[in-house]
Length: 279
Image: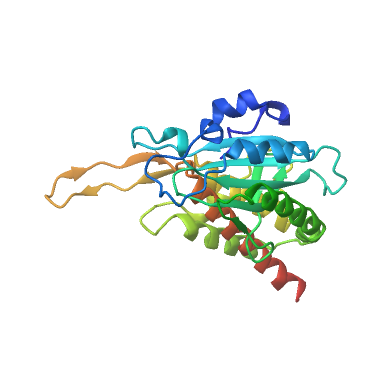
């Protein structure tokens, strides 16, 4: 998820959110849900957070091929408070809210990080900050507000970890280990791509070799895609010749996969941090 952040890193208007993620504004659940399902519209939660000073910085919803379901699918929003002093360099703390109105997801709240330099939207893993799952009930709005307060309380500890990563230099071999571990999260051995390609920086300043920069470069390459490789020539099961082809890795567009990979990458970075600090 990259293109869903507002231009110039400015808050999104509700009109823009409705264009990007219309399911946020659903006024009823999808027809396939149970009668026991308590419908709490996401927009009610959004307006509650906005009244507490949270701005919407990004919005996206999941595509579906099921007719009539598009207005109810899983959606994700990222919130940030203006004037927050808890910032490390170009890294801003955020709240990440996920929900759906098709039984695909309860309200989930995650701690997030936004890196201004490359518009990377990171999500902290559950071992650093426990994901908050909020049931569709009459108390959902209050629970989300309390969840936002919990995330705010944890932000200093999370940013302290970011600061540690920024001060840890990695050797060439250590960066290679991190790239190979990250590569295995998305690809298998059938992809003829060297994992070291995940270390290719896309902008000036990201050629640094500290853990935080390396983590961000790997995350962007893994999720944004666009890495080139060539499939070898061969033959199919019937013996027909298949020529080699130039290919590119695909961008991760699934909200669920993006969240899963983000959390796994954070875990890898945290484990590398622990190893380096123990030396």
